[in-house]
Image (cartoon, helix red, strand yellow):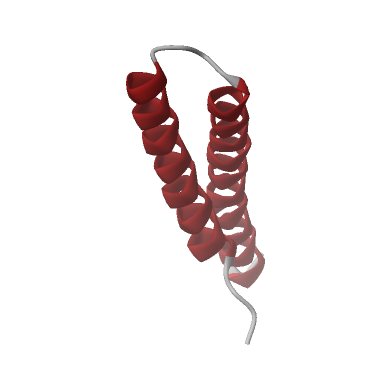
Amino acid sequence: MRRSPLFSGVLYIIFGALFTYFAIHDLQNNQDWGFYTYLLVILATFDIGSGIKLINFHFFLKKNQANAKKPK
């Protein structure tokens, strides 16, 4: 069974939030923006951006499916 874009999008946003939490935690512990902190911020940015894009794609598909079922 295939996963819906909505489920994948929510999963990506959760991972993005988790990476953001780890980046903030690392920054508080080290008091410096190191390589690990930058890496976590970049991963969080990609994950949150991909999650938003997948959620938008889900609603786009649902809208197109609803329009295809309407009689003309």
